Length: 185
Image (cartoon, rainbow, N blue to C red; front, side, top):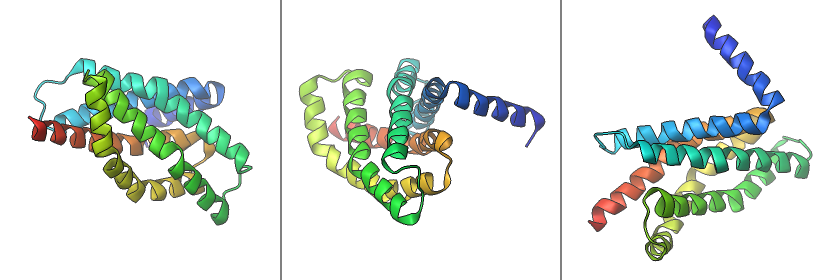
């Protein structure tokens, strides 16, 4: 790793200690925007839709980072900071039954209502139609990600780890939403 990268990482870790919520919110916003930029490129959008990218960043900044920060803080209290296999299994179950469905539902609402500007009645129908398949897909990957995150990643880095996994998930959800929009056209 270069000296510049090492120094940037060192300063980032200091910010995580000094301003954890702000740092996680900003990190989540940047990574959410990056995920959308990649999703736009992969899905064939020729010109980057800046408004959409900024709205994704806003979601990461205002919801993703803060939610992850407080979720992991709460879990460290509930599970007393333990990370033995039995406790991690409980943490994974807790996460998958609470935050996973909530995050997917809120993302689908935000994507439809705010990013795409679709009226509530259509967003509600889309959620009824797609939520189960989205959540089932999340449960295929989420438990493994949660296990690795809770077993091996230090508490202060768990949100960042989830952000990078979320980048991939954002691309998946974008492509799913886009393919559904193309089918409906």
